[in-house]
Length: 80
Image 1 (cartoon, rainbow, N blue to C red):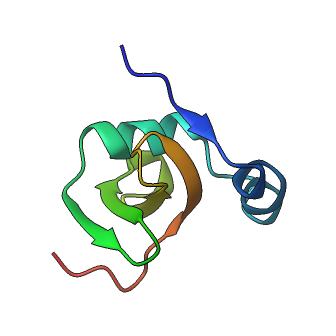
Image 2 (cartoon, rainbow, N blue to C red):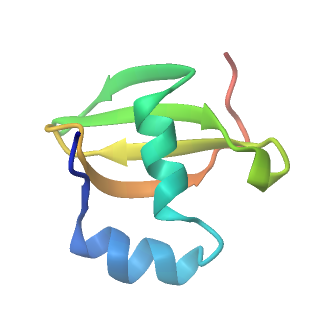
């Protein structure tokens, strides 16, 4: 079983600005993404559909280890 962590930025900034986002949604996206890609600065992007967000796509950004969540937000511009 994978252990997921969150950065201080995610805990104190992201969840404060977007209190509707749930950590379990982020984990769900990481474990079953519809798309992934590397990002600059040794980060990784994951996209996944979240029914609880009215079917919108959630983008989750992790650190290099792919288990430390750094950012998450609904991605209005996602194109598969």
